[in-house]
Image (cartoon, rainbow, N blue to C red; front, side, top):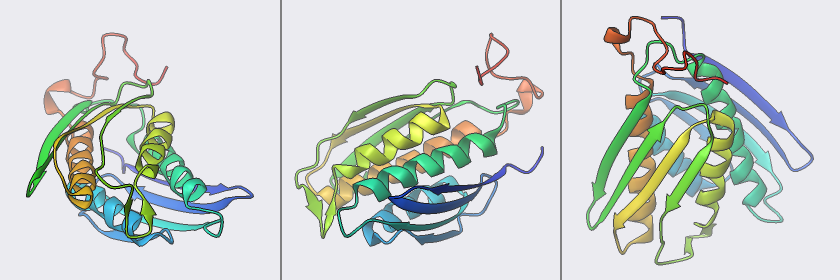
Length: 199
């Protein structure tokens, strides 16, 4: 299998972002988003997905974090789409349940070539520290739009906002890891009766 790696730079008047991604890594993260809680959450995807990822981001955080969080999701989605390529010989689907104390979340993904986000998540608090947790929806929306995947995120229970967020990101990493894993029985074929997952 060819190296499944990608590098993306996204520069606008609002943000400047560089992402490198290796789908066949070992869980190494080098994250500098300017938002420590977002770094902590993305690190969960990296560690549990066994990806290697570098993110360097500068944004208009003096206004708020919205542009930075959304644009990181966009750039990461673009990198993911490039790294996974034509999806030949992979599992395509992935799912994971992850608990953290009282919190439990489920994430299901289809590398379908069609962007779709179901975000059935309720946070008891609006913020963790200074971070507005509503922005996680914007992060995942940016990701699915540009990764071209269908992603269902469901929180099944939980009362601690930090725990809920962490279970979502851990489960996302594990679901993506399953979906991009090689399937030897596919013998290099694209896992679709259409013969393509890129159109």
